[in-house]
Amino acid sequence: MNKIIIGNLESCNLPDLGISDLQVRIDTGAKTSSLHVDNLKRIKVKGRPYVEFDLHPDIYNLDQTVHCKAPVFDSRRIKSSNGEVEQRCVIQTTLQLGDNQWPIELTLSNRQDMTYLMLLGREGMGERVLVDPAESFLVNGG
Image (cartoon, rainbow, N blue to C red; front, side):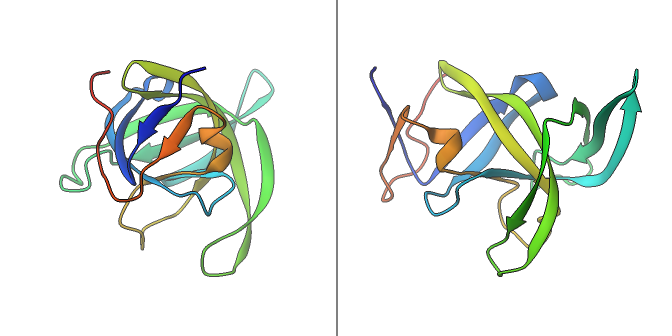
């Protein structure tokens, strides 16, 4: 399998959620990938647990909001970068980087204090990528 070379920052799409051109911070120190969301609500759809949430894909235009709904895949205790442990909902969705796409698991969190709305962790990268930490936006197309 040919690995794609990615930088420390990339632009990705989350087509299942209707989100495109989202800046993602590549974080080889994080096991799981996470997405900053607002107004996270747990709901039931036909008896199954779902989550509804809002996302601001453009950090420079907070008026632009995408409303998303996804089935809950799991719930996990996650230790954040500041050492706090919290219970987070996990969804499964498709990550698209350039011409490549694959399923990833995303924990949903409130990352208001963070610069980037999404972190791509080791599990989300799998054996598909190599990271060049000195570069950004190496993946084209998509």
